[in-house]
Length: 308
Ligand code: AMP
Ligand code: FES
Ligand code: ZN
Image (cartoon, rainbow, N blue to C red):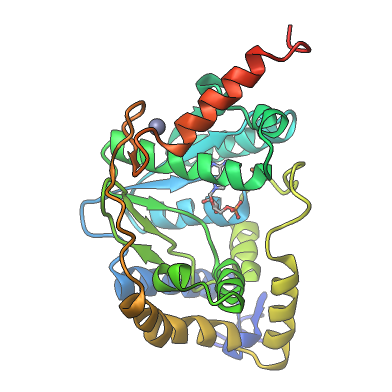
């Protein structure tokens, strides 16, 4: 197979675009898709500082490299969850990557803030993944606001977004359907949240990471039963195989026609937002959910006879 653009031997087949690219033309295609996302949805304005949430996986590290090459002022943020073995490995990949490319990095250690994920798992009687997601989002926003970043970028790709949209649609979850998308505007003490990779599939971000020699953390979280939305992603892989281009058409169609319709009918949730009494993060409950979680974990840890 030959590259559609330059006729050199192709290295990356892209059936959904009915094409294949060599390494250099794939890099140009990848950059073009990220540029298109940024331009179409006003994701980053000139002069803005971007905080990129880095898990150590292919998507977030690839995003960081691409945005830095495009000339944006980027700083990485890694949340060290404190999970034995796994968190050490993920953090090492993030730190190695940022050192290699000369990129700025902030690390938040949850253990230093009294909330290592193993303790959340042990002392809190609810699924650890949802609490973990909430804690991570809390720190993404907190670091962005405390350190003057206007934008917070995550590495969600087209497959993540389509699977999430599909799950929200199956439940007709109007609240989520009214604001799912590549850009959530800043409001009420929340930084703007963006997903510049939303036009690129998981396969494409994996190719980008591989072709750029990025060393990634691949081990799944030991506390999760598998990647999220695995079943939905398999279903969509089959749809895409039989009808290439379905994923991006479904998602783009939602952004053009679905989301505005849901946004129109969805009422603002009335509760007023104010800074958390303890940490200053925006909340409608006086003390924010993460601070309350920290207090609950500390109390149960202190009462635990197995602990020292
Ligand atoms: P996930 O929900 O694990 O698929 O992650 C989605 C995105 O969240 C990633 O692409 C990263 O941008 C960000 N992320 C996940 N885990 C972390 C972490 N421990 N530290 C910083 N960013 C993270
Ligand atoms: Fe948060 Fe596994 S529980 S990544
Ligand atoms: Zn708080």
